[in-house]
Image (cartoon, rainbow, N blue to C red):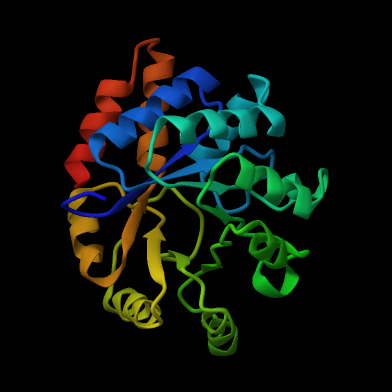
Length: 248
């Protein structure tokens, strides 16, 4: 783990192509990322803003498939000891079957699953499959969640909880208020390792969140860098590494 802030960095597998996304992931590790969140692109990513939606579309147009995604993960987890979490949407689990998908994720070496649209009470067997495969499923909550639902999530004693620091989609810059901090403190008192993201793109924000969470998730800002490099047809590793370093 990093000596400074704990940061989970996000990337879209296959954006702008699998090799470039692999190099970006390794640059994030070199920059000091404590966790990698690898998104399998999906055509209708409901929680994502325009940047990540566009990256998903480009990756799919580039020929990304779930099979290629698992090959990518297996290769990546063989190259780094930094825990890799797989993030995607429920539809991608349905075609192969939830249990089969989770087993393949475990075989590829991922440390956890983040599936925002399969909550604990409509999970299609995801949490049970995770237990069976020995891979934790990370529940996703947002500020303003109903108290009863939140207590039910915390009652599962998950090792990690993923939370947005505001309602809405990814991308737009987030202002962190007292209510958000109080919510994060409540989550952290549960004993779960809280990972907080959505609109985090500056060290000032990471520093502000650090006393209240286990780690901060940074996604759109990195996808933006990777996209800019691809558009200008230049390597992005140096810029990605420097940006992650700047957060820690």
